[in-house]
Image 1 (cartoon, helix red, strand yellow):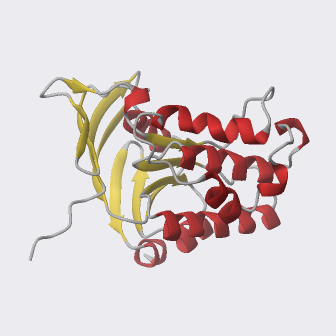
Image 2 (cartoon, one colour; image 1 turned 90 degrees about the horizontal axis):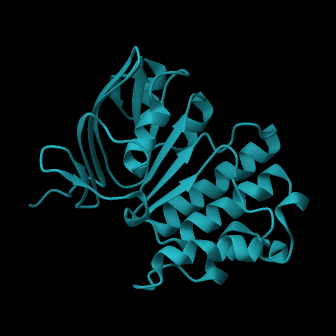
Amino acid sequence: MTSMLPSITFRARQRRGDFVLDVAFEGGPGLTALFGPSGAGKTAILNIIAGTQRPDAGLVVVCGRILTDTDAGIYLPPHKRRVGLVFQDAQLFPHLTVEQNIKFGRWFTRADNTAPPLDLVTSVLGIGHLLKRRPATLSGGEKQRVALARALLSAPRILLMDEPLSGLDDARRIEIMGLIERVRDEFKIPIIYVTHTRDEVRRLATRVVRLNAGRVEAIGKAGDLLDS
């Protein structure tokens, strides 16, 4: 019986000043949480996957496609990586409507037309009524829904989410966690999710990589790692 390939293989060593990141892990389908305190190296890992930082040495393979291989001299530029990004700050274009912001994601998939339909994405995320509005008129939770929709319209091979619930009140956090669960389960896109919040890990994560000071402390299921 052939075993399934991991959704992501990540190995990287990177020195930035006094901080050294030296991390290796694999992630499968579902949501892999990078969990640990501030300064553990979580966001640096996302930047290396996205291609906005080059490791001193490393290998990044997403769904069988090599994005970075320092030994082989392979380094795909960020716009060719098919990585969807959702940040703590939704980073929407203020001069565009919600619909225009979402459709911007399609710019990256014009050649192959593999993006999910706009109607499906807006329905799942419950933002169809917001399409003509501009970001300044949206709540924090609404902005995160729009940012998630834009990422999905880029037909990503993997979604990177950097503390997307930080700054939201408890009601909005619970609401957006439910939407992330739907995206995880309905769109079947592997997700790498950065957080230092235990309840997000417990609810959302299929697999957890616990980090501290640029190193992996443990890898396993959420319940096992949080209870240990």
